[in-house]
Image (spheres, rainbow, N blue to C red):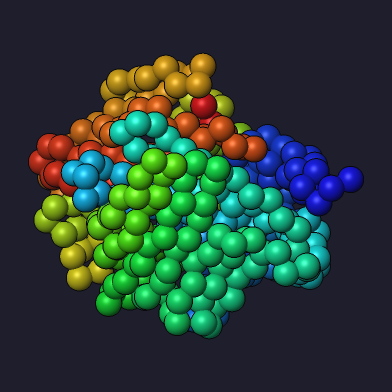
Length: 342
């Protein structure tokens, strides 16, 4: 049996991915649980937390090409513990890279096993990798991001002078009425430059990027089926993260963070932000809400979030929608939308 086949079977039958993203509500017995009293310790917390069951390093970028077109990039590395031992050999890794472009979306997926040097993360200096895909730099404020698939390659640099932004109460992000939670922080202030190479051309790009870091052992309840997540760069300099989690009962649980231009987070109470699907698109045989009305009355925010490229479907081991969006209304800008459970 090949390594790829072995890892594929692990992810298909493992507790996290057996139900798609709904498997994030699986048992956490034997694993560490998020603690609301815990505060981040950097640079250590940029690295892996194998005592927790699940974890990811996730970057999205909104870019403008030298050809005048809009592009989106994604780079994500997932860690899934197979047993609560904390050992490298008991970790499985999965990564996704994608390019959203006017002529279609391209994506690639990598799988790896732990303990053989094929994938991993260190905090100081920062390096997250799987095979040749990598995010690396002397610190998280100055990083290089590289990935490639059969029909794309991208290499960009992302820099910022802002500190990271804790999500939720000091980085303790609650996901449900039952109190399921994760440790979660973001870096939404990257300035980006680099290039995307396609089979027929290379496009120089500049723009903005957003990094998310999250780890837990069972962040969703057993009945939560997925989420609709937004990260918005507003023209005024503010940032907005919103997360609308769906339940098989039809109920939703919505949380988020308003971030000032100087990086100060204002956590939102559950339900303070509303996200309402307005228009759908037929994508990969599914009906996907690709236009949303987002409202945050306390900030006089009432804007329409629309997919730039509605066909941005990730036909990966766990399929989902991921792509860049426009923001128009009381607050204008650009951002990213991720939707799972469809």
